[in-house]
Image (cartoon, rainbow, N blue to C red):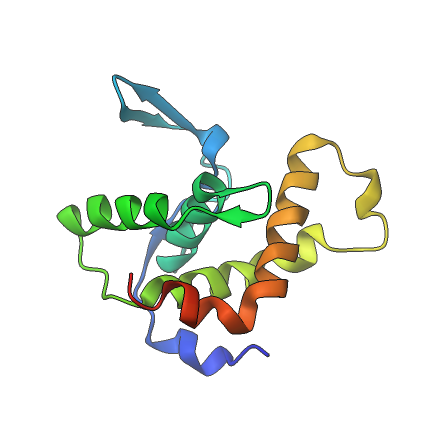
Length: 137
């Protein structure tokens, strides 16, 4: 399922590693601050992209492709991110986070962790379809 060799070509840099919607503060429709840097590390940049996209664009088991496209358009205004790399970013996110949230006691999660488990389950169920869903973004 996971070909980790594909990750080795990924850009590395300082990564938040917990860039989900509750760690963003907004003012006038713009991000005004990012919170919670306790997981900051030198890692694959795509982890933050995958986390932000899944957190902001997946709702009730449906990935809003227009929100993904809007996020990537804004991101690309600042930094290079080749078309199609969002697939790898989400796959990398699953590879990093799935063991944190998917386990025998996951039915006892509080609200935020159950959200993350739902996200990881969605990625797992759609893993092989990610290319057809997102390759043009």
